[in-house]
Each structure stands twice: as structure tokens, then as C-alpha cells.
Length: 349
Image 1 (cartoon, helix red, strand yellow):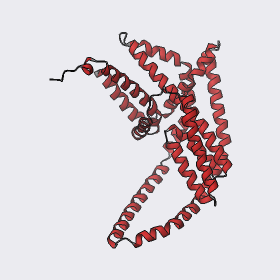
Image 2 (spheres, rainbow, N blue to C red):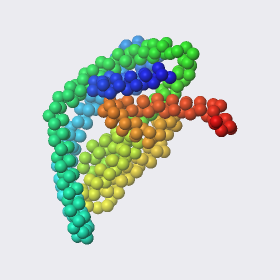
Image 3 (cartoon, helix red, strand yellow):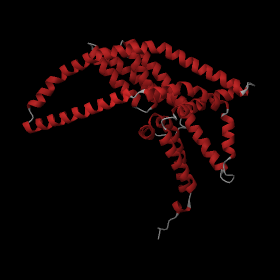
Image 4 (cartoon, rainbow, N blue to C red):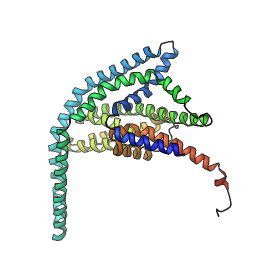
């Protein structure tokens, strides 16, 4: 037990210390894990592992690059359009809300008004301080540039070697397992693998389908920046409830200030409701299934905790870590429920 606790502490410290340079390696590991079934399928058809890996990664990065090149001009124009229309929407919102605020302020005593003014002044000071820190981070953005450069350059190389040697790495780690506990450890890792495969591969397919539905639906409605909002809402559906809620709030908010009738606003709402119904009753049961065993609240907590502790690297590691903890917790509870301590009817002395 002491060995495992010491190992967990050591790994956590290493992640904290090296979180700034681990991003391309974690991303490459995720890509290799995602594409390993395709490599196994090609290898089963008498192709060498190295050739299969080259074909898969070249195809993967080629289509990813082509997709980015096709989508970037559209997204760039929609971002510019949204930035230009944002001041107008803010002004319209101020015009609508000003009479309501004036009526509320007119009924407040002078003491409450002074407290509100002081709170607003304090908030303004914090906003200025936050803006200064953002500018400072932008000024020292060379680190972010080199991180992005390493992500683009190092990730494909590391992904190639990991995908090529994936089965060898698994076999080597398996040979290190203690002989007496190896069957139990293999069973737990098999459960973890099933959980990750069902969630990551299945949820990625769900996000892709939802992105297409939201983007096409909002674009057909004529919502400004509909493609941008739809793709963002679909991608953020990886976090339970966040993608649909954020997309719905943003889409309806823009529709209220852009359209003069209720029908387009209701249509925007209907697009997101249709996507959620399709996800709940068709996509998730078919593509993800019931093997995940990860509660949405646990996933949200893991993503927030991973981001707070280790940045974007922690976000990438959050779901695998949550899967490991979930599987081990269920195993520990099952052992407890089958133990003599649980079934004992005598009160402890």
C-alpha cells in the first residue's frame, strides 16, 4: 500500500513540475490510443505495424489539416462579424435594460445606492487589474507560441512511435506486474480500457455529429456566426450539459437582438432541443453505450480540477484519471460489500 501511495504522490509532483512541457506528449498519447484499433485492424490484414501506423497517421493529419484550412476562412469571417456586431448588441441590451434599472434605482434608499457605487468601483479596479495581467501575459506570449510550435511539431513524431510500439509497450508493462496480483490488475485495466474506449471514442463521435447538426441548423436559420456557435457548442458537448447550455444561451441571445420576429428565435431554440433529444435517445445509447460508468458530475469535476491543477495538460488527463478512480472505487466498494466486516451483525467493540 505504501508503494502505491508513494507512486501516486511522485506522479502527481512530476505532472505539476512538468505540466508546461507535457502537452504534446499527452496529446500524442491520446491520438495513439484513439487510433490503435485501426492499426490493429490493418495489422490483422497482413500489413506491417510500421506501414499501418504511417498510413493511419498520414491520413489522420492530412484530413485534419485540410479541414482546418477549409474551416479557418469561414470561422475567421464569422469571428470578425461577431466582433463587429457585439457593440450594437450590447447597446441594444443597455437600451432595453436601462428603464428597468432606473425604476429599481428610484426605489432604493441613498445608503444602498452608496454601497452599490462602492462595489462597482471595487469591481472596476479588479477589472483593470485583470486586464493588466492579461496584457502582461500577451506580452510574454512567446512561451505560448513555443508551446503551440511544440504541439504541432512534436506531437506527430511522438504519436508515430507510440502507435507503432503500442502493443510492445503494453506487453512490457504487463510483464512487470507482480505475478500474484497480475490477474486482478489485468481485469481492472481491462475495465478501465473499456470505460475509456466507450467514453472517448464514443463521445468524440457524438460531439462530431452534434457539431454538424448545430452548425448546419443555425446556418440555415440565418443566425450570425451560426457556424462558429454550432461547432463550438458541439465540441463543448464533451463536457456534459455545458455545450448545449452555452450554445443555447449564446444563440438565443444573438437571435433576440438580430431577428425582429419570434419564429427565428424559436427555431434556434428548436435546433438545440432537437440536438439534445437526439443525443439523449439515439447518439449516446448507440455510440457511447452503458459501459462508461462515469457520472456527468464526476466528469465535470475532473475536468475543472485537472485544469486548475495542471492547466490544459490536466484537462487532457482528467477523463482517463476519472476513469481509473471510478473503476478502482467500484472495485473497492465491491470488495467491501463482500467482506466479513460488511456482513458482520455484531457492533464493533
